Length: 130
Image 1 (tube, helix red, strand yellow):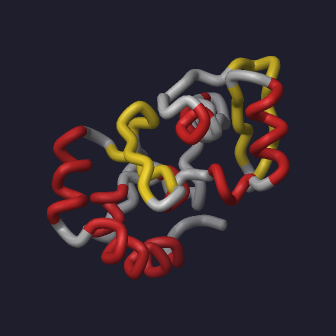
Image 2: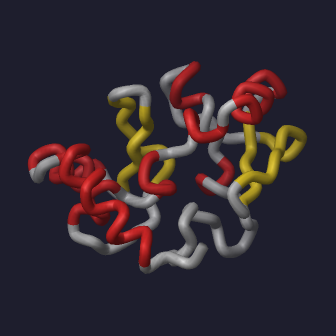
Protein backbone atom coordinates (compact mmCIF):
# COMPACT_ATOMS: atom_id res chain seq x y z
CA UNK A 1 0.00 0.00 0.00
CA UNK A 2 1.22 3.49 -0.80
CA UNK A 3 0.37 6.72 0.98
CA UNK A 4 1.19 9.38 -1.63
CA UNK A 5 -1.56 11.41 -3.28
CA UNK A 6 -0.53 9.91 -6.62
CA UNK A 7 0.28 6.20 -6.66
CA UNK A 8 3.99 5.93 -7.40
CA UNK A 9 6.06 2.79 -7.75
CA UNK A 10 8.32 2.94 -4.67
CA UNK A 11 11.26 1.42 -6.56
CA UNK A 12 11.20 3.50 -9.74
CA UNK A 13 9.26 6.65 -8.78
CA UNK A 14 6.99 6.11 -11.78
CA UNK A 15 3.31 7.02 -11.75
CA UNK A 16 1.04 4.25 -13.01
CA UNK A 17 4.02 1.87 -12.80
CA UNK A 18 5.21 3.34 -16.09
CA UNK A 19 1.95 3.08 -18.04
CA UNK A 20 0.93 5.92 -20.35
CA UNK A 21 -2.06 7.87 -18.93
CA UNK A 22 -2.95 9.33 -22.33
CA UNK A 23 -3.17 5.92 -24.04
CA UNK A 24 -6.30 5.08 -22.03
CA UNK A 25 -8.11 7.92 -23.80
CA UNK A 26 -6.49 7.89 -27.24
CA UNK A 27 -5.95 4.17 -27.82
CA UNK A 28 -8.47 2.79 -25.27
CA UNK A 29 -5.76 0.52 -23.90
CA UNK A 30 -3.19 0.27 -21.12
CA UNK A 31 0.09 0.94 -22.92
CA UNK A 32 3.53 0.86 -21.36
CA UNK A 33 5.36 4.16 -21.52
CA UNK A 34 8.95 4.50 -22.73
CA UNK A 35 11.89 6.01 -20.85
CA UNK A 36 12.52 8.34 -23.80
CA UNK A 37 9.17 10.04 -23.15
CA UNK A 38 9.02 11.07 -19.50
CA UNK A 39 7.75 14.15 -17.67
CA UNK A 40 7.59 15.06 -13.97
CA UNK A 41 4.29 16.24 -12.62
CA UNK A 42 2.65 16.15 -9.18
CA UNK A 43 5.72 14.65 -7.55
CA UNK A 44 5.94 11.67 -9.90
CA UNK A 45 7.60 10.71 -13.15
CA UNK A 46 5.09 9.88 -15.86
CA UNK A 47 5.95 7.83 -18.94
CA UNK A 48 4.34 7.96 -22.34
CA UNK A 49 4.26 5.67 -25.37
CA UNK A 50 5.02 8.57 -27.72
CA UNK A 51 6.12 12.19 -27.86
CA UNK A 52 2.59 13.12 -28.99
CA UNK A 53 1.09 11.56 -25.86
CA UNK A 54 3.59 13.33 -23.63
CA UNK A 55 2.81 16.67 -25.31
CA UNK A 56 -0.92 16.06 -24.86
CA UNK A 57 -0.45 15.32 -21.14
CA UNK A 58 1.76 18.38 -20.67
CA UNK A 59 -1.02 20.60 -22.09
CA UNK A 60 -3.56 19.41 -19.50
CA UNK A 61 -2.32 16.77 -17.03
CA UNK A 62 -5.46 16.91 -14.88
CA UNK A 63 -7.53 15.72 -17.85
CA UNK A 64 -5.45 12.55 -18.19
CA UNK A 65 -4.45 11.75 -14.61
CA UNK A 66 -6.35 8.76 -13.23
CA UNK A 67 -9.24 9.28 -10.86
CA UNK A 68 -8.33 9.06 -7.17
CA UNK A 69 -4.62 9.46 -7.91
CA UNK A 70 -4.41 5.95 -9.35
CA UNK A 71 -5.82 4.25 -6.29
CA UNK A 72 -8.28 1.39 -6.64
CA UNK A 73 -11.78 2.87 -6.88
CA UNK A 74 -13.31 0.14 -4.76
CA UNK A 75 -10.70 0.77 -2.07
CA UNK A 76 -11.75 4.42 -2.03
CA UNK A 77 -15.31 3.28 -1.32
CA UNK A 78 -13.94 1.43 1.72
CA UNK A 79 -11.76 4.45 2.67
CA UNK A 80 -8.68 2.28 2.21
CA UNK A 81 -6.19 3.55 -0.39
CA UNK A 82 -4.91 0.55 -2.32
CA UNK A 83 -2.63 0.90 -5.34
CA UNK A 84 -4.46 -0.16 -8.49
CA UNK A 85 -3.25 -2.32 -11.35
CA UNK A 86 -2.91 0.11 -14.30
CA UNK A 87 -4.02 -2.61 -16.73
CA UNK A 88 -7.46 -2.93 -15.09
CA UNK A 89 -9.39 0.21 -15.97
CA UNK A 90 -12.67 1.72 -17.06
CA UNK A 91 -13.19 4.94 -19.02
CA UNK A 92 -16.29 6.75 -17.90
CA UNK A 93 -17.35 10.40 -18.08
CA UNK A 94 -13.99 11.47 -19.58
CA UNK A 95 -12.12 9.94 -16.63
CA UNK A 96 -10.08 6.79 -16.20
CA UNK A 97 -10.75 4.65 -13.13
CA UNK A 98 -8.25 2.01 -12.07
CA UNK A 99 -8.80 -1.14 -10.01
CA UNK A 100 -6.72 -3.77 -8.24
CA UNK A 101 -8.66 -6.65 -9.80
CA UNK A 102 -11.61 -7.37 -12.11
CA UNK A 103 -13.60 -8.31 -8.99
CA UNK A 104 -12.87 -4.93 -7.38
CA UNK A 105 -14.00 -3.21 -10.59
CA UNK A 106 -17.28 -5.12 -10.55
CA UNK A 107 -17.83 -4.44 -6.83
CA UNK A 108 -17.10 -0.72 -7.36
CA UNK A 109 -19.99 -0.31 -9.79
CA UNK A 110 -22.29 -2.50 -7.68
CA UNK A 111 -21.55 -0.45 -4.52
CA UNK A 112 -22.33 3.13 -5.49
CA UNK A 113 -19.58 3.59 -8.04
CA UNK A 114 -18.31 6.96 -9.15
CA UNK A 115 -20.79 9.16 -7.28
CA UNK A 116 -20.10 7.48 -3.93
CA UNK A 117 -16.32 7.35 -4.44
CA UNK A 118 -16.19 11.00 -5.51
CA UNK A 119 -17.82 11.94 -2.20
CA UNK A 120 -15.40 9.79 -0.18
CA UNK A 121 -12.20 10.71 -2.03
CA UNK A 122 -11.65 14.04 -0.16
CA UNK A 123 -11.81 12.12 3.14
CA UNK A 124 -9.28 9.51 1.90
CA UNK A 125 -7.09 12.23 0.37
CA UNK A 126 -6.76 14.08 3.71
CA UNK A 127 -4.82 11.14 5.16
CA UNK A 128 -2.40 10.88 2.26
CA UNK A 129 1.03 12.53 2.20
CA UNK A 130 1.07 15.69 0.03
